[in-house]
Length: 388
Image (cartoon, helix red, strand yellow):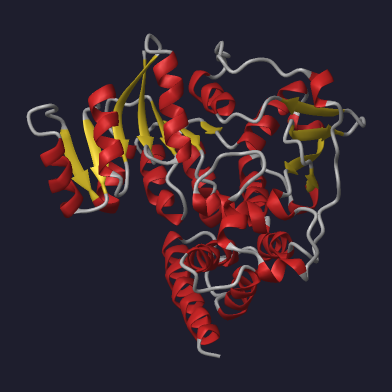
């Protein structure tokens, strides 16, 4: 029985993790859960999976959860960032699934690694912000960092076809989001509802907006650099609207190995949980004749400048990837709140990158300081634009 600690239990990835656990109760159990404010959902998850410990956002939500569960469950409830770290490093867990959205996932993921837990990584921001530090910790504590993102899981699987020293490049696929065929001019009037309407995947709001700008793919490029030890010039992005080919690896003899499958997050989640075994999931089979065609296109960097920004931040190094991520989180939140136009998301990130640059990628203190400074700067930029 593999025991799981789950960070981000009430998000889209967390819900899918629990779907896999539900399908294989003889193989997996949940010993710790971390959520945010959705106490109604986490209370139902607690009653179903009976974890030993649960974390929520603050003391007020602790009290609400205690009221909802009075007399029904007697585990420990903790809260805040410290509570998330406690769940991440929970003593009885064998693997921690890191599915908290955004920069909030970095410190809990590091806590899990330092506690000697294998990590199923769905929180790309962990490696975007502090890839060098995190991968050094993985090596030092001799744990496994298993990708949960569909693209990185695909690369992880395709790499098994050859030797790492024979890899020439990795190719990340992107659906192109809801605006793949729009012109830059047409982007000016994008609404919140349009941006949230992803054509292939069901995701949370923040990731859906990142997919619409292609920032999500830019963050995945940075994640791939650290996860697979690839230089930026050996990472490529192609637009693949059908989301059937999840990513590819090219070897130096010209062979290209791809991982294909239906667009269902349970596949990479189950593989991370059961690795190196594969589980018999009830999602059906891929019928290639029904796919009819598989298309691939070069990204349009003029319409989607976020991808260029991410490559530039990766090449520059230092704290710039952390700045990129922080500014993007603030700008996406402002767009979702109706305070920012869609094109201004990336404009805000670009302006913030010009303002916040000092710090070392070897210093967690520098990275966290740059994250905070970038958030303040992005908010100032957004506030100025609102009053101009």
